[in-house]
Image 1 (cartoon, helix red, strand yellow):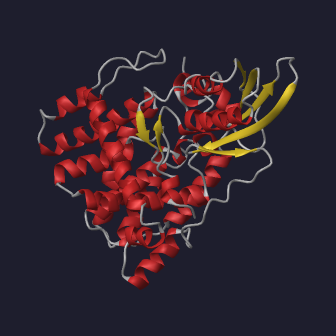
Image 2: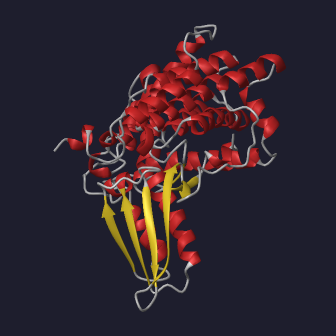
Image 3: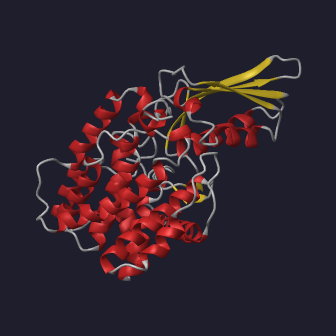
Amino acid sequence: MESIKQLYKIGHGPSSSHTMGPLKAAQEFGASYPEAASFNVTLFGALAGTGKGHMTDVAILGELQKTAPTTILWEPSVFLPFHPNGMTFVALGADGSELGRDTVYSIGGGDIVHEGEERPDAKTVYPLSRISDILDWADKSGKSFWEYVDEYEDSDVWDYLREVWQVMKEAVERGIDAEGVLPGGLGVRRKAVSYYLHASGHNDSLRSRGLVYAYALAVSEENASGGKIVTAPTCGSCGVLPAVLYHLSTSKGFSDKRILRALATAGLFGSVVKCNASVSGAEVGCQGEVGVACAMAAAAASQLFGGTPAQIEYSAEMGLEHHLGLTCDPVCGLVQIPCIERNAYAAARALDSNLYASFSDGRHSVSFDRIVEVMKQTGHDLPSIYKETAQGGLAAIK
C-alpha cells in the first residue's frame, strides 16, 4: 500500500479527478510536444459529462495553450473501457499532420493512468493493506494506527502532514471570511459565514454542531471556487476532515502534534480504501468520496478522544457503512449541489460515529474491510448515470 502522502494532495479545486488529474495529464503531454502547432483534446464519459462544471476545460486550456492553440471536444456518451474519466490528447504539426497522441485516464485523487498501463504500482510503503491485519499488528505490539504510519513512512511524513494541516486551517479561515455567489451559474451563495454567525446564538451543544457545519461549508465553498485545498480523499469531499479537526482543535484544545497523529490515522484508513476499492466518484459514486471522508474523519475523532484501535475501526466502519450506495449526482456538473451540503452533513455524522463507538467496547459484526468490499461492489453495480455524469439523481431535476 502506498504512502498517505499520495492520498493527501495539496492543490486547487474544484475536483481532483476532473481538474487536478487532467491538469497533470496536460502538463505531461504538452512537455512531450513543445514543437506542436496545435492540440486537440477529446474528453469522454463522466469527464465530458461534468467537465465544464468542474473546470476541466479551463485546467487543460490553461496548460496547453502556453504552447499552442488547443481545441477541446466533448463526448459524454462515449465511455472508454478502462475508466469513466478518459481523455485523448493529439499533437498536430503546422501542416496538420499528427505528431503524437495519448489516451489518459483520471482515476481519482489527482492520479492518472496512460493507455496500456495498469493502475500504477505505487511505491509500497506499508506491508499490510487491510485494517483487520493492522488491528492484529496493533494488538500484538500494543501500538495504535498512527504509530503504524510512523513505523513505515519516511520521517518527512510529519513535515508533510504539518503542511497539510496548515492548508486545511487556511481553507477553513478563508472560507469563513468569504461571501458572495459561487462561480458556475447556479447562483449558489456561500453559507459558511452565515452558519458561523448563527452558531454563536445557540447553547453549547447546538453551537458546536453549527460550527462543524460552518467549517465544512467553508472548505467546500473554497474548493468550489477553485481555492487551495487538500484532497481528503478527494476535492469534492475535502471539507469533512478539516471541519472535524479544526473544530476539535479550537474547541477542545488538542495540540497540533495530536492533530497530526489524527491526520495520519485518517490517511491510513483512506489509503486502505484507495488500495482495495476506489475513491473516485466516477467509478463508485459519492460513497467513495464523502463516505470515505466521513470514515476518515470518524477515525481521526475517535483517536483524538482516546479511542482504542477497535473503537477507531468501529467509528470508521460506521462512517462508511452509512453512506453505502450514495450516488454522485452533481447538479449541472458543479461541485456545489448537493456536494457542499453533503460535506457538512458527513462531518456531523463522523462525530456521531465516534460518539456511538465510544459507548461500545469496539466489537461489532461487520468489519471495515468488509464494508470496503461492499462499497466497491455497490459502486460497480450503480448505473453510470449515478456516477458523476450529471444525468441521474438530483442532477436530473430540472
